[in-house]
Length: 110
Image 1 (cartoon, rainbow, N blue to C red):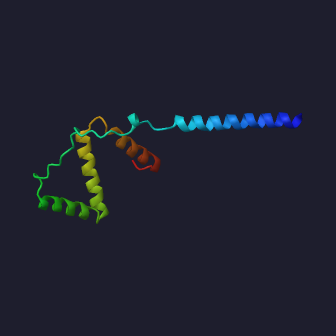
Image 2 (image 1 turned 90 degrees about the vertical axis):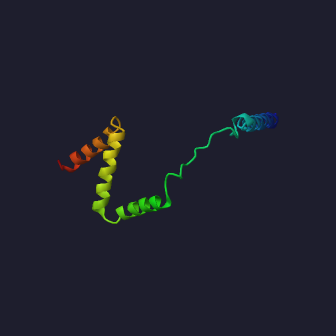
Image 3 (image 1 turned 180 degrees about the vertical axis):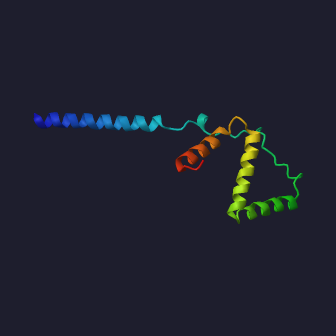
């Protein structure tokens, strides 16, 4: 009798596990509606390379490469970029200033 009850519980357990595995395998199937659609009418961003000549691009590249040669030049370029950023985004410049202030406070340099 004990053996019969044990087999009954095992068969119920196997049935439940098989049902659970089957249910989970069908519940995570990716539906075609959620797949990426190919929208052919989408407007691709176009680069306006006609305004930039090859010489200007090469010159800008050489300037950027030469900036990294000396740490002083890199610091000057950083300050220049930071000033441009402050001009373009006057409301968002606080994070950099706060970080700089915290760094000065932590190191004791005022």
